[in-house]
Amino acid sequence: MGNDLRQLSAKDLSILNNPAIIALNQDPLGKSVVRVQRNKHVKKDKYGIGETQVWSGSLFGGDQAVILVNAADEDVEISVGLDEIFVFDGPGGSAPQVQQEWELYDLWADRMDEKLAEQILDADVETARKLLNKANWYNSTAIPYKDGLKHGDDRLFGRKVGTVQAKGQLTKKVRKHAAEVYRLKAVGEGAKRKEQHHQTEL
Image (cartoon, rainbow, N blue to C red; front, side, top):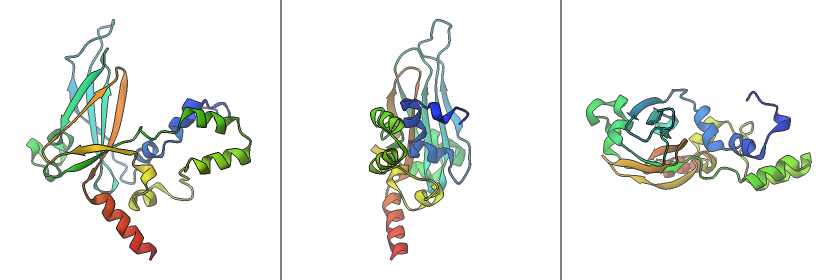
């Protein structure tokens, strides 16, 4: 963050305080996403520019990040198959992940409400602390992202919005000049992590 934190807007705070997105940036694997799809056959803007892209990358714990980017001059339905998402794990759809069913999590869905963000910014320190606690704020100083991911902390996974069947497609309508960010989690992995965490606590 290169901005003056004393001058944060409510919108900025709602972005910076989205642990599901920040967890991607702080992922323990530290791998970059790569572009797996590009489509220039979409409506162009007045400068003749317009395309859609899909980016994909491996995450800690066997999860996968998928980003749908719409740089077209209209809303576009973007579709990408598991064979493309995992193309670098096995070309031609040969990656074992293509044969799995995946839970789909929207990482923007549970972003902090901007009205709450405004209340926090306007509050004194003690009131702001209470508001953050009430909002179930993720404190990465107390719980490093690696630990939160390992133990399946719901705040780091956004909201489950569906599943992608084995050999299936992820299809979403994306607003123009916008991006959708998702985390794919192999079906059953989330419950397994929470059970392991529960046994560790016992």
